[in-house]
Length: 330
Image (cartoon, rainbow, N blue to C red; front, side, top):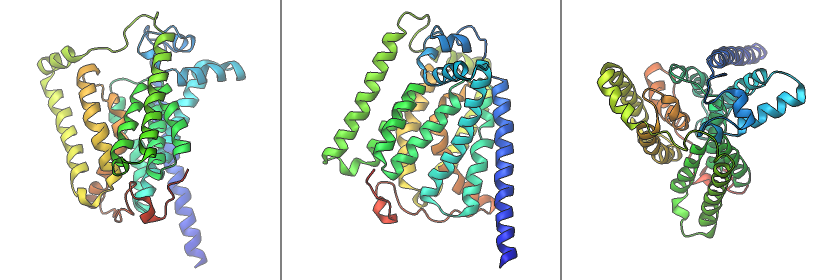
């Protein structure tokens, strides 16, 4: 009995040590490829608020880095690296916590934690931005709080996510589809209205603040997407096949997967895909980060069956938290 406990504790320490090392290595590799001095979004210009639009609109991380650099008298690059790596660690924990809302198998949750960081590698091949991992952390934390109906915590996280990147507005769709059964209630419309008001207010303030900056609010890249079909059809085919593989993994066995995640995929996936085609640069799949935690969690149960890691049946849907003893109160 005692030896069994010691062995179990040792395995947990080994897992978290391995996960921490992998996360740190990937985080450092990510930091090494950041656009520290790229003319349109150099770190110093982001902090000063003089970078090009739309990059300058993502104010959260540059503001935090600027404050930390002044407070501790250390180079801004060092502070930025700490924020990026800490956000990656936070994302791994947040995604594992979100998975724990629906599944309780320790092996399954361990797979989620490891996959959360390792499966990011393809997103790092083309380009990287300072605020990407912070966006992943806040968006995933928003999903977690939505799944538990923790509205008083969710709304501040939602606002921070919007300050980090405007695509966090997709959380409204996740909320709307998952709470659609309650559409007759005042709370449903009240929370929907608050989220919309927060987005519109922050968006108008940020656009007004940086209206004189060079660049444009959106970069239209549809012609570049068409050009990629002509110049690199083989690479387009590889990316398309990988996308179809992820879609199959996510859709397979849908009846056994959480309704909350399926609604989230419906709210986020199509919108991001269209946005990527119109305003994303070819092969820059980091534009799909908001879909990453959702489709990863939908794909892993299918992958788990293939490699012998069993996910137990979902413990309920986020739309019906009372079925698993989760309070709807904040």
